[in-house]
Each structure stands twice: as structure tokens, then as C-alpha cells.
Image (cartoon, rainbow, N blue to C red; front, side):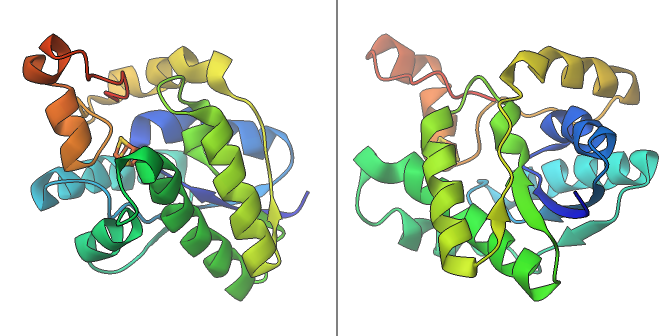
Length: 188
Ligand code: SF4
């Protein structure tokens, strides 16, 4: 394995993933593209934590410029039933395109370490992005290492989010959604 573009959703999921792919012999570059994160201040706080982690781990970090919330809302225009799938597709397609542009071996995502995400949908989005961009989607089920990743970042005192990212997930993380039986568990 030569070079991997690692889509990073947050510092706390990225910590173990960077180590994992390095142990497999890959040269890892982190890539930040998360226009789903609402509001912008939250996006900046999570990105700031990721910049700090990247410095500590000495991993190159590419940050997609701007804050394109409109791209996220356009991507989920088909409705709530496919919201997370289309959110994953948006982010992983951009990752795959950048990996292809830079001539890297493949791409993957820190989303694959989270037990709070719908794992099969991430795989579907990754495979679709790979086919579209012509670059390999590197898959590993890292969910059993989720707490290991949190242990790595715990002493770093990084900003830690309370919900998955979008405005819907922020609402779902509140008691109102829980009371209505609509909370989906994707709080981190
Ligand atoms: S809950 Fe998370 S994965 Fe689903 S649409 Fe919102 S930000 Fe994206």
C-alpha cells in the first residue's frame, strides 16, 4: 500500500485511523470536507481540533476551502429517508476526486470507525465514489477501535462534539426528539 487520502470527520475518530493506516504501511494524508456540519461555528471548532491533532500526529492535512453548507442541503434534497447516504456520498465523492487528482493509491474515511453511523451506507457511498473517480476505496471495519481512538485524544483536551453534524442531528440529540421517539442515536 502506498498512499491513502483519509477523509476525516473529526479529530476523535481520526486519531486511531491515522495510526491504523500507517501501521499498514501507507503514507497518510488527511482530508477535511464536512459541509454537513451545522452551524459554521461548530464546523470551525471541529476543524480546529483536527488541525491540532494533525500537528501532533505530524500528518499532512488538506482542508477543502470554504464552508459549503449549500452543497450539503442540495445533496439531501431527495428527503430524510436517504439523508445520511447522500451525506456520505457527498463527502466521499469529493475525497475520491481529490485522491484521483493527486495520484494517490486510494481513499478511505474515519466514518468507518464510528459505531454511531450506518456502516453499510458508508460502504455503499465509498464504492460509488470509487467507481465515479476511478480510484480504490480502502475498506476496513474499525468500529471495535472506537474507544481506542478516544483514549488517544483524551489527554489532548480537544473540542468534542455532542452530535453527528447536521442541523437535523443536532435536533435529534435534544430531548424533544428523544421524547417523540425520533432520536436516531447518531449523536457523535
Ligand atoms: S446525521 Fe450525520 S451522517 Fe446523517 S445527514 Fe446528518 S451529519 Fe450526515
